[in-house]
Length: 407
Image 1: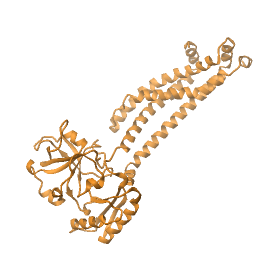
Image 2: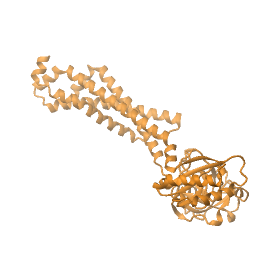
Image 3: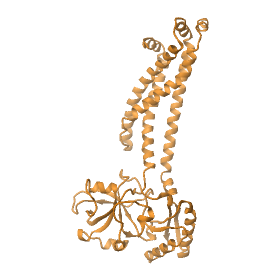
Image 4: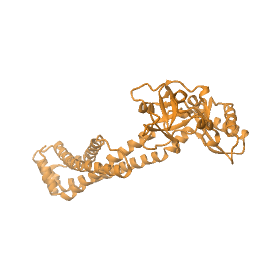
């Protein structure tokens, strides 16, 4: 189709055409960045924890006043919790993935390394934690009974020599970071000056929080913590018995020591949902904004196209009288919209890139992949063609005689 008549017509309607172009450009810029932000949030929300999430319940307690026998009471609690009907296994940990608290540490390949190699979340697990949490070993073994040590003793007996290194289990991410292209089993590295000996690797174990732009690096020490330290008791059961087991656990702890505070009592799935509540709300807000912008843009295109059909009745009638088919009239309006949308999309892509640079500088967001620009372009091209189709069909349906008489 010859676009010169279209360009000539648009030059006579500069203001209306410019408004549509600017509307499309603004929508393109915002939608491209919003889709990128949505993808970032969705990736964060759906990242694996590594745990058997739908089989776990959490009970977190704390003592009143100074606890002189906290470790002994913790062992009594664990024994009582193992007797809860429906609980298949029980353990105690210092922290969990996706909870706003974190114990992190720097680690190095060499003992006297000037700068640490990286940082990782430090998990401390009591006996049976790997099986209770559902962590998947992909290499090596679980901790041996003789490798577990109480927290207070661990601080006193930390060894700086490889021959007395403490056992440690890494997740795959930190294993690849510390020993790229190598088998990490049997390797020694250092936490400060304390030597650690790798005995196993788990597939996934997410940190509690997104700290220092790190969402993957974690390691586990066989260190027993007590209930007063703040870490939770974890009970594994079948999904349908979680509420029953949670009630039984609370009753068992109450019998052991009624003079304690229950800080937390919920399933792990509920904890994860609570942690990502704001992220889900942000996704919903951004999706709503995108839909609203697209609807407003579509309405603008429909309104302008309908106005132009009404204003060009004589022109359409003349073209029909000279032999133009309905299909040619329909394609005329679709081509016109495509040209306006293309100009708006080009401006919108430039604006989208500028907005992304601003977000990177202000909020340390990552650079938006260029894939989102053509994605936004295709979306707006399709939107424009769909929006203009109705008015274009009405224009194509105008009989030549009616159009000329109306003129």
